[in-house]
Amino acid sequence: MIPSDPEALDALAAEHVLGTLDAREAAEVNRALPVDAALREAVARWEARLAPLAGLAPPAAPPDDLWKRIEASVAKRAPAQVVPLRAVASGAAPARPDRLWKTWSIGATAVAAGLAAILFLRPADPPRMMTVLLTSRDQPAWLVEAEGGGLRLASLNPRPVEAGRAQQLWALPPGATAPTSLGLIPESGQARVAPGIVRPEPGMLIEITLEPPGGSPTGRPTGPILFIGRLAPATGT
Picture 1 (cartoon, rainbow, N blue to C red):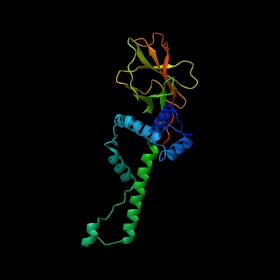
Picture 2 (tube, one colour):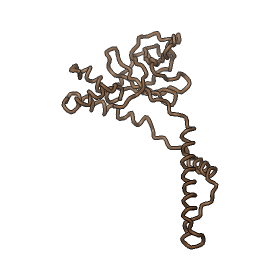
Picture 3 (cartoon, rainbow, N blue to C red):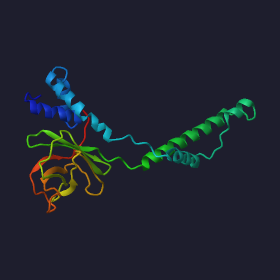
Picture 4 (tube, rainbow, N blue to C red):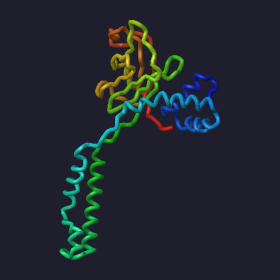
């Protein structure tokens, strides 16, 4: 059911745009959008607010030597000599449809085998995981995404930090007894956690606490929890 409370409606719209709703909730929102003006406005606001996040993920180009590796793989699997078509057309070589067909089929099979080998040997992409850290009033505040074995953090609704204090990011993997510090959050509201500090996994608790300027002096959270959420596999809307 689409909530009538403005804050709950805003939170639902944020999750719809971020793609964190389950299939049933997403379908309900999609059905309501054409007839619910307040929901459409909330979704439009979140789409405009989150659009700059697309710039945080620059396009990745394939490796420079990819085609060389494919060609080398094909050459190893297709030693047969191919008669150039220009030689056939000029009469320098006899037109042998059966041989041309066999040579073409061997080459095509080799290409397919080479591409299949590359795809098979390439490590599988890690599952896309994310969470939206919520305030104590369940308002979306931060977007956290698993990226390349690390984490990426971006503020959805930047707010000033209390004077003389700092915000510190923590992670608590399932089964762990104490959270791991992921460092202080810069004033820009964007941060990256390098791979190796913690391994992102579904169910991992992510939280931000209010700490002294240099961070927690004990290695564990000492201040109040400002924002909290759990990593989960991302789903499309």
